[in-house]
Length: 80
Image (cartoon, rainbow, N blue to C red):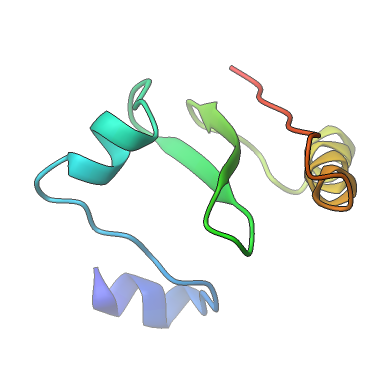
């Protein structure tokens, strides 16, 4: 995993949850692959299950909606 993170140039923290305590109990895993969006306070603000092409306009709009919701503490967005 460390090599993949380094090769792909990830800058965000990558969670490896071998026990399933975080992804299973806290975030509710829907199935691999699952991407979780966590705000700066550590709160889950969104998740998507299944493969995604993150380079599309739709994906960018989804990310922007999450960023915009961060300005409003009550705002959350989840896509399944």
